[in-house]
Amino acid sequence: MQRFGKYILVATMTDDASQEKCKANAEDLLLKHPDLRCMVGLWAYNPPAILAAVKASRKEGKLAIVGFDENEETLQGIRDGHIYGTVVQQPYQFGYHAVRVLAALARGDRDVLVRPFEKDGVTYRFDKDILYIPHRVIKKDNVDAFHAEIRKLKSGAGTPTVKAPDGVRVAFLSNNAYEFWTFARRGTEQAAQDFQVEVEFHMPARGTAEEQKQIIEDLIVKGIKGIAISPNAAEYQAQFLDQVVEKYKIPVITQDSDLPPGSKRICYIGTNNYEAGRAAGQLVREVLPEGGKIAIFVGKLDVQNAVDRRRGVLDALQD
Image 1 (spheres, rainbow, N blue to C red):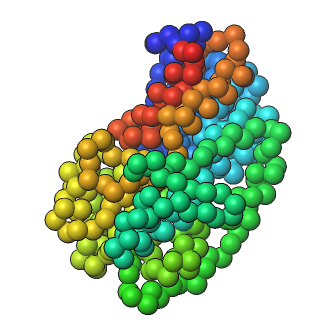
Image 2 (cartoon, rainbow, N blue to C red):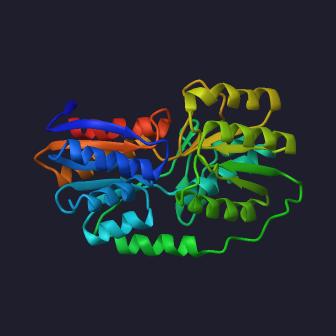
Image 3 (cartoon, rainbow, N blue to C red):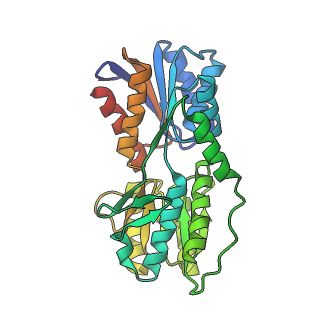
């Protein structure tokens, strides 16, 4: 156990991106720590798994749940009062801007990394090699409006397949196959239309670094001109992805989760995961102002977004 201000972290539980394992982890902790006051889920499927464990243990209303992302069950849990709030990203924008940038890089336009871009009244600017997409906090007072937004995105049938006039094809790789990435796919489809580029979208079924490596090796053989990836094991994958950039001259950008400093990736597009973690920590402080025992749940802790979010949560509690 570790103390952070008025809060005691009893455990950080990992589950290898398995919702069932996350549920089992939560059930075990509820038995071991009957005085647990709050559970925090850092990946999209964690809050629903935690909620299922809480319901199975008949502890609804006896402890708080704070989550990440916009899983349908998470939003319904907020509406029902079982989940206090969730910090959501904007995966649609991950997909849109990743394809926008890759299309430009594949055509030799590196000014895309310094040129402001405006869409729907919002101006997007890189800060050196990072384009942060703002996070949002969803609670009971705004969950219905937000839910309506994402239902509209999710119900879209997708745009027609694009045949790029110059044959440029780029790829977008998620880090797992959860619904979160459906929204990113919609973004890539719209960007393919807007920038006349062909896009391959891949979601590794098992969510492993080995799957991602195999997909990229196949893409290289196909002559892909750019890759956007959410790395599943940043330290392990950095050398391979550097080789893709240096040996094969294929631009690699990261989205959702970054590689370690010093990598050859061109840029990062996604949430400021540390600040988003702090926002989740603030939700814990709101729902548990007197402090108490908490637990954190996440798929893996060798993924940079998990590391940053966890640190953000704990720093907010320490404050």
